Length: 281
Image 1 (tube, rainbow, N blue to C red):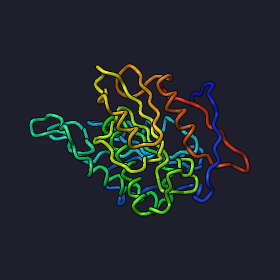
Image 2 (cartoon, rainbow, N blue to C red):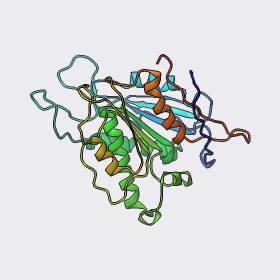
Image 3 (cartoon, helix red, strand yellow):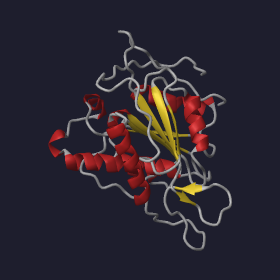
């Protein structure tokens, strides 16, 4: 792992969950996946990686391992639907094309959201992951699914526990175990519909995106929509196309994780987290 001089964040984590988590099981996750426990033996956070349109989970499994985030296990999921009429292994999170092969203007992400809900339910119920220690990272279509699911999870939590929420709460309260996700990073993935929420989702979100004419450029109102749905949105806009590649492009992402990943004290000491970039970046 390469690291430079970065601001260091120290965050104490709750000790209510076990240090080593149970690995997820394939019967409960109905799509291919790749899970890797934390390199340092402490599974305090779980980073779920969602690939983009036309890809598989395998490159994102490799990315997750190369990040080597402290006390962080990784779970890369493959999208459920194979793109029709293609010979290569290319998958989509939801039906994306009409019969003529044109991209749908208003796709329905419900099947993908139900899949992620099933996965998260298994992780919380069977693998002992607290919801606020589950973090999402998605590229393009995967980023849209990540953001849409965080909102859905928040709305569900409000409906199930209406008395547990107040207008003054913020994401720092998640250390008390309240049921919303730890964070979301979306790479060029906008929300698919304009959010209608009475209270903004407290899950912190970072949106990394490219300006036009990049192929992955988002609609002009995409960031506005994210700020409507989420209380804390960080925006990073850099020229180029596709996934972050250089150290400079990964730095704000690593800073975001430094602020929002939990850290469990080891033998009475606080471990710290500093900025880093994936191997090979």
